[in-house]
Amino acid sequence: MIQLYIPLGFLGVLYREIKQSLTDLDKMFVLLEKEREIADAPGAQPLMLDGPPAVTFENVRFSYEPAREILHGISFEIPAGKTVAVVGPSGSGKSTLARLLYRFYDVTNHEPGGPHGGGRILINGQDIREVTQSSVRQAIGIVPQDTVLFNDSIEYNILYGRPDAGHEAAVEAAKAAHIHAFIEKLPKGYQTTVGERGLKLSGGEKQRVAIARTLLKNPPIVIFDEATSALDSANERAIQAELKSAARNKTSLVIAHRLSTVVDAHEILVLVHGEIVERGTHAELVARGGVYADMWALQQSGSD
Ligand code: ATP
Image (cartoon, rainbow, N blue to C red; front, top):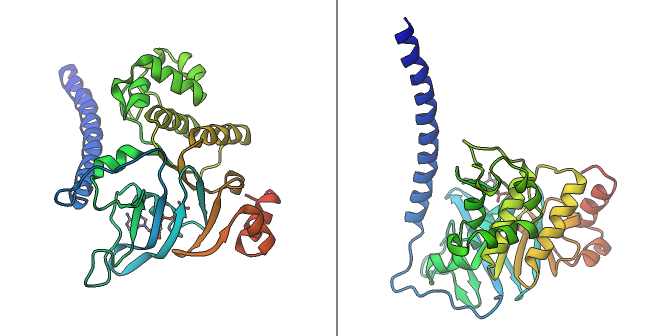
């Protein structure tokens, strides 16, 4: 009997391990599948950059599925080194803008007879479909809504994107993202394993790892996709301050769920059902008394 129990217990562990590996493999295949969809144009050259670039969305249309268009012709420009913020109801297409800029997907070509039928996205005047995908991703740092951590040390996770930067650089970035003190208290410090099979981090801690990663990568463009899940207000204010310092002198796109994040933006876009219904600075939009002003009044009344 004993002999039977041991293998069964072992099989249970093995089963969980295999299931976990399959989940990782699934994710990997989904990523590989995506990579195949987005191929470099023949003879594509790397993106040419000279400091923080301007980012331009020109009449961008996009559908995940042919029958359902999500973005219906979006145009805006983030001038070099400035911040544009996007706000709007859940499902309006905010994160989709970020995914297109990072080139997870390509802008949809609707109209026959031209590669730009579905609009285009330009970085420093260069269509992101016409330069190498790797150079676009190199130029952009993302702090996503929910950071996926690798099952590896927290240091590996911070250094991801610039693995040769070394321990000291990881510590510097962690300090700037205010996660260094937390890491030092972990049982194995920077070598503590995190991720699904290691120490589970809270939403705020994961975001700080992503901020540290972005600070270390030091890209000219940053995308912040603010988490929908509310952090406590002290944590939220701290994260906002860190995001602000990470965005200094960078061209940034901020997808915001809390309007307090966007008050200083160069321009705020209000996206509803894939269309920009209002745009302007915070003061202009509040004075206008439209959708944004209503959202602002609602959040000020503390009902967010
Ligand atoms: P939230 O504020 O809730 O994060 P959002 O404004 O960022 O929402 P998106 O994530 O851009 O919205 O999604 C816009 C629309 O596209 C939604 O209706 C969503 O269901 C749909 N969508 C998102 N991702 C996919 C996908 N991979 N395949 C099909 N439809 C998708």
